[in-house]
Image (tube, rainbow, N blue to C red; front, side, top):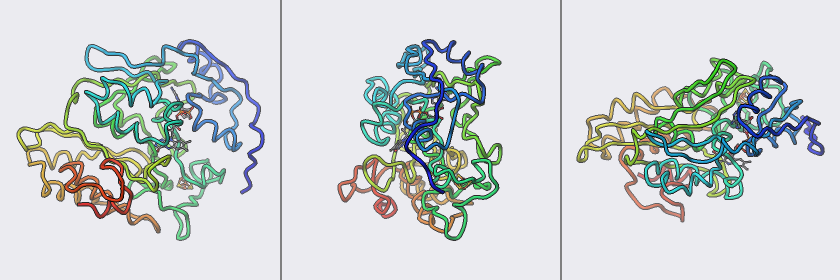
Length: 353
Ligand SMILES: Cc1cc2nc3c(=O)[nH]c(=O)nc-3n(C[C@H](O)[C@H](O)[C@H](O)COP(=O)(O)OP(=O)(O)OC[C@H]3O[C@@H](n4cnc5c(N)ncnc54)[C@H](O)[C@@H]3O)c2cc1C
Ligand code: SF4
């Protein structure tokens, strides 16, 4: 399908300077409005003329949505805080290092300077067909172009397929899930605070949405409680190139150890399913066991139970097994080929023990 990229469709640009005003505008315009944060995902859709909102509500002038604040129990990060600010923030680095690491591996410095946490967690799937304007299930049609014997599905899902096999692409989300973060959403009915993993919507619930937001809703902040502050963290992202690329897969874990025994743990992966996955069965299975290679091996095998590969993404199964293993036991050997421990190539991530 031809995509014309010359001129963006016309829209009214509304620039509120408070969250309350932003929300009033969003409620007034309902499904005709589009929330714009850093614009990195938004402008793709507009310039490709795939999404054509009548009204753009630009949050860049809403100062109260920006910044990182200490709370009585942890920190609150405004939805408009940039990924760079989070990566460089001393408290985040000290107590919630898994988040600092995850956001520092997003895309490129320029994108992290402009991209916001609210936009990163709310961004849409990257499936070629959908983003190219093909009328697939997610776009309201009745076919999936990726899930066919010849479809381009190397980056797609091995879990949770339900007509749509696109994956959630965010690097920050698994880190937020293991930190037990809460997402604060303003709706017409008032404020809703949900667990990180409950913010996301799978195709089995609504194939045209990726998160709980409905027209009129605004994500204002993400709160991280102190529960996991200073825990033993692990984050690993695998991508085709070591810069400016979405994850083929990522994994995050937060562990509390008693000696070498895992007393408590949270573990999450992304880019394997239409919505980010917290691995509760793995968490339960490894509690009370040593954080070593045998436990990691067992956890990796458990994590991939039920995985169903598509035509071209079978490599994701051994990749996920190894990432989960390392998220439990740590990295057993130094990285090769110039890759860093948190950011190996796909081939190296599968081979590394
Ligand atoms: C070339 C490229 C490479 C990238 N690589 C990676 C990567 O490796 N890893 C990764 O995680 N991400 C990656 N991204 C995504 C990037 O990190 C951006 O953060 C993300 O696209 C959106 O952030 P943004 O602030 O620009 O939001 P926008 O593009 O403005 O918004 C994104 C979506 O979220 C909605 N939204 C934003 N803020 C709110 C809010 N407060 N309330 C309600 N809805 C909201 C918008 O309506 C829109 O639908 C990449 C992007 C590009 C263009
Ligand atoms: S994977 Fe989802 S987004 Fe991609 S073509 Fe299929 S239905 Fe559309």
